[in-house]
Length: 217
Ligand code: CTP
Image (cartoon, rainbow, N blue to C red; front, side):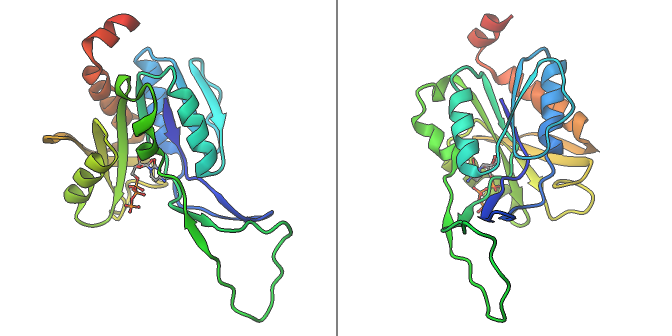
C-alpha cells in the first residue's frame, strides 16, 4: 500500500487547507512497486496517476478519509509506504455556505486531525505489515526523524529535507536518508523520484520477514 499527496481539509464548499505535496513521490513508489512485481493499492489525495496495470487507486480528500482507506487496505497489505503529507489540523467547523468577504478579520479555529500511522498501533494486522513512514523536516533532521520513527512505531523512516532547493515536495527529484531503530541504513543522493522509489522499494522488500516473502513468491 502506498499513500500519496497532501490531504485537503475543507473550510467551506469552495476552500480548503492544504500543503505543497504533489503526489509525485507516492506515484513513483507505486510505479517502483509494480516494477518489483507487487500489486499496489495507491491511496491518494493528489490527482491520480494515469491508469497502470497492477495499481488500484483510492481517491481521498481529508486525513479522516485517508485513515479509513488505510485501515481497510492494511487488512491485506505486506508493506505500507506512507508518503502522503497528511494535514495535522483541520478547521473545527466546515461552513455549509461559501464564507462571504467582510472588512473584519477572520479567525479559523483548528483542531488536530488523527495521526494515521500512530492510530495503526491497535490495528489487528499491525505486526504483520512493514511500516515505512516519511519525515518532512527542515531542521534537526536526523534527530527529528529518529524521534518520529519511535513515536509512530515504524520499521523504517525516510527522511526528506523539505527545506532544500530542487528536491522534495512538488519537485521531480528527491534525496533521502533512511533510518531504522539502529540508525541510518540508506542514503540516496539527488535523483529522479522513480529512482529514489526503486531504492526504497528494494530496501523495504529486503526487510519483509522471509516467511512473508516466501508466501508471496
Ligand atoms: N502522518 C500521519 N498522520 C498525520 C500526520 C502525518 O500518518 N496526521 C504520517 C506521514 O504520512 C508521514 C509521517 O507521519 O509518513 C511523518 O509526517 P510528518 O508530517 O513529517 O510528521 P508529523 O507527525 O506531522 O509531525 P510534524 O509535522 O510536527 O513534523
